[in-house]
Image (cartoon, rainbow, N blue to C red; front, side, top):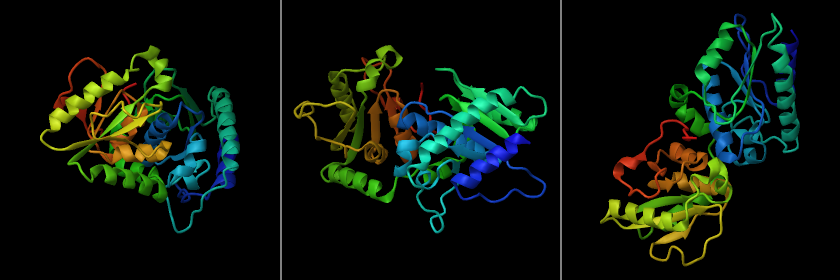
Length: 324
């Protein structure tokens, strides 16, 4: 069938072939076909799809990390077909292949939308509209029952937390930042710990949050200062240091009442440094939620900024789980 040739061609061109299917099974391909927001969004979607592929025996195809891929262990060696890292025989792919691979994904979506309507063609396509959460589990199982060999997805809100929880360690392994990025983050966190008993990461999401969800989670610095006071009180008498992670510029003296320093300053090094903290405070965000999941760090995702923080506000995320 056309769809079989198409997917095999992609695999042959862009990456080393995963383990071949047995004589009694046929390869099935799950493909993410469109970029969804920024780093946190793309990691979250990719993680849930990777978990689905691992749980159900599909091959994940994902070229949507693009400019972020070079910073992570697994994606840095994959252009489109995602396989668990094999450090002894896999090298980083040239960056020029990523836009081409992404283009293949966009073509796959357009083809899949039409092919799924033709009886006998083993292709499925599903879309998650903006803010429309879709349970990935029934979608994948339904595609299997219909004999689909290719399932194309477009949209951000595909999730299946049970599979992601089962595959949490594999997800962390695949999406581990490169060693030099981890080392940079570790140095900053170690310096913060030098004179403290606990380090709290504060994620100040400004910039795009002025318009995201109509500005619902755009909090002024004064709100973060009060939350920091609450958090420090909750951990008393322990000495608390704060690391500040923000996508906006802040005056040097804004956090003068605290033992507070900025994070490393890189998009991925900040992401990893957050995951090394003892607590995280911030608005609901895929970025800080990813760090909390990756590092198993209790996070308070503040939705009522005028309410005092309590111990119950901090939760450990067993799977990548942005609230929105």
